[in-house]
Image: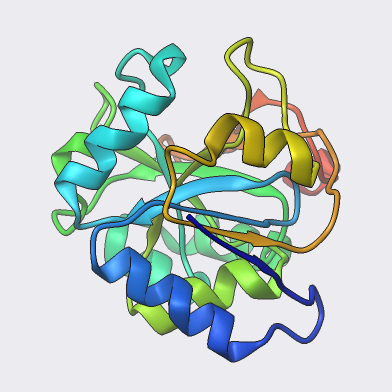
Length: 203
């Protein structure tokens, strides 16, 4: 397992590239977002997605969300109406997960029963750079322990995930509040889970 301290505001590109190579090779990484640390893999690496489900047994087959580099990328992987696009444009990048109708490009493993997907564009340069340099989204789920508690410090992350992941990008302790989930499958916002971020922008 490779471990790198990465600067949150001026990320070392050599570490970004190392992480991207790991993703392309089918590896799992841990990386910072604007809320909590994420456990991720390449969206098109089916075996890697299976590994995440094995590590996070508590997910019980629930669909995973994924990180896009910017709002333009979202349109490749989800169907978005103009009103929804305008509302998302006001909120992104930010600590929100948007549930949207899935496009064909998204592996069906990531669909839920309603054929929708959860997509993020975090307000975190490291996370967006990873998706940008990879060239497509990164599957993501929160870094938690076996009880579902958020892990945000170096020692606990290494303890629980050191044997399971190939690379960790650590930028310091983060918060413990996850993203707000907004369902836009019906063209109007429904708050599924209130977390980080201002939800009044969706009213």
